[in-house]
Image 1: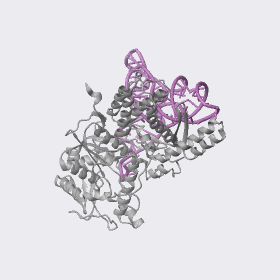
Image 2: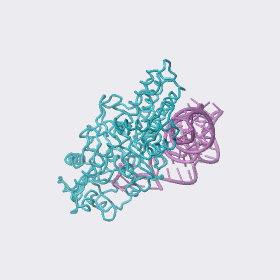
Image 3: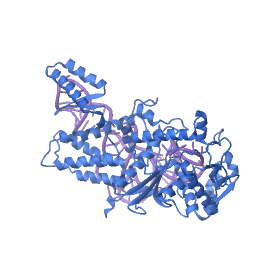
Image 4: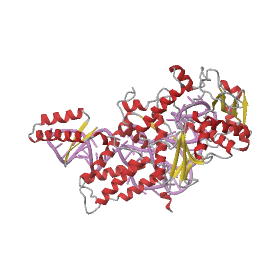
Length: 491
RNA sequence: GGUUUCGUGGCCGAGAGGUUAGGCGCCGGUCUGCAAAACCGUUUACAGCGGUUCGAAUCCGCUCGAAACCUCCA
């Protein structure tokens, strides 16, 4: 009966919304594929980070004790272009004459700074792939012992065809092995070692030019791409946990192969729910490093990218992302970001006006109903755009109350404050960026300047009053002449 | 070629078999010394063609178009 107060999430495994029921309540294990740290974080990184930050926050709001693991991939993966066979991180390190770990550390740091600005909560554990080589080797050995991997020239490959005899490879992505066998392209140099094109590497023997390498029972080399997530998720969340998240682009082959590895090594799927965020597109096309159309978060925040008309604050970007449901593509444009910026400011400004509303004995509003709708929206697979729509209803009510077209009781005002604190602050992680900017000194100075302008206005010296207004605007301070007096806002 | 999605008004985006999404923009009004802000009102929608239904933007089929994945990528 109470279904509206229970969380439903879209499970990619069966492509429908399911009631979320943790394996071991009140604990929830959440694993999300993190960044590969060989480049600056861009807008694309913000989407999964924010999507699963919302999930993390909301699960906590619901009272769950969440262990959120998000890895750092600091062991690069193979490239397939002409000069390849080389580890991506190793390649970049040589170009810049840095230690590979120095590069990884540098970009990890940059990633953290960007995520902090976006107010993305740090995960409970952020394990590095390079720190879990032993665990990955152990897992690979278990797969070999199970007879589902073979060794060729010091490299280890997962035997997908053999695995498929007892389990179904492709159950997450909807792919059929026979189709994959007949359609997969075979242009990788290393593929001649594979028995089948669909087989994937668990361990790769390092070529001489590789500088990232570790000893193993098979060769000196490095783990395959999919190994780290299985090894680290099972180490920190157990061999069966609740939710595995990541970008849709990782569905195949990465997550499909994680399922195969987990089944081969442990006999069952790694998790109960698979959740995937969609991509951010730019002019309808996926943003990606290889396409050369990606916008780094730093460029976005500073407005230095040629495609940008101006800088957009981290909270504007966060709000922009939350205005779309996480499973849909989100198209980027200056126009859309500017609309988000204006909308976000309006949302935050209304909250500040709350203290100016006269308290009434009678209420003309139903805040509890709005709160309930916000909860229902969150419970419906994290429908943040719906939550935001409800919050704008509150904005309208606040502004109408200021215009004396609605009346709030003290309880109403407290309920609205709580609504903001819970949904805007705690759950959606939106903070007021100007909060810290107005010190006592600035407030005092502003009061003085505005008093001077007011004097000029009384004397009908509009030349001077406008001069003050324009000078303030040049400093990005907007003066607002309201019915109840003059206020100001940093724009 | 295969797999998975998607096509909503000027833009971004929810929803979903019958009842206003929301934001931004445009236009009109209130307020203002003038603006801005705020409020009120208004304007364009569900790719196309069939089918199911009392009724479809919402279900089914086809057509057209777009994207992601199949190769590193969030």
